[in-house]
Image (cartoon, rainbow, N blue to C red; front, top):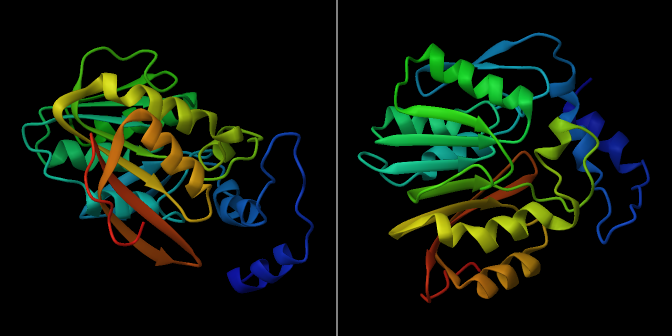
Length: 243
């Protein structure tokens, strides 16, 4: 069935209302549908590398925001790099391949932990490690670059795959923003992925509360939705023109 036809079908379906502040978005099921069809691991090629993707993990074959995140990465050579929610590990993989001194990936989904480790092992990375945890609860020390492509829907998630795009009442986003400064080096930067579909008012309110400012922002629109990557720093700086 063609994607355009699926879009028309989903637009005819009512949006379900949840108990919290946010409704489920009609695009969520459409977006995740092709990933749910996979029953065994499969390979995706990007940047001259092959990545293995496990069923139940957000896939760069169907989600381009991870590839865009790789494009937006600052120089990682000699830096310590922390990623929250790596999924299949695409961003952390390329951060390590670009010469990061140390890469740590923290993932709450047990399937995604195995998937990220698989891709680290396939590429023989000795400077990259993945651990299972919720945000910073298993992390000590500080990092030069902290990356989080945050879920941008505020509705509850039904399973691990849906949790990659849904964050009930933006609980994880709020906790990430509140806790990230303690894990950042003095000159460190945060890269935060988000979308206009999400609650941008809440995002900027939480950033202000945490004393984080937007140093720059890159945006791309593709396949009907937009993704932004914000570079955040501690303290005040001029907001980018597109804020």
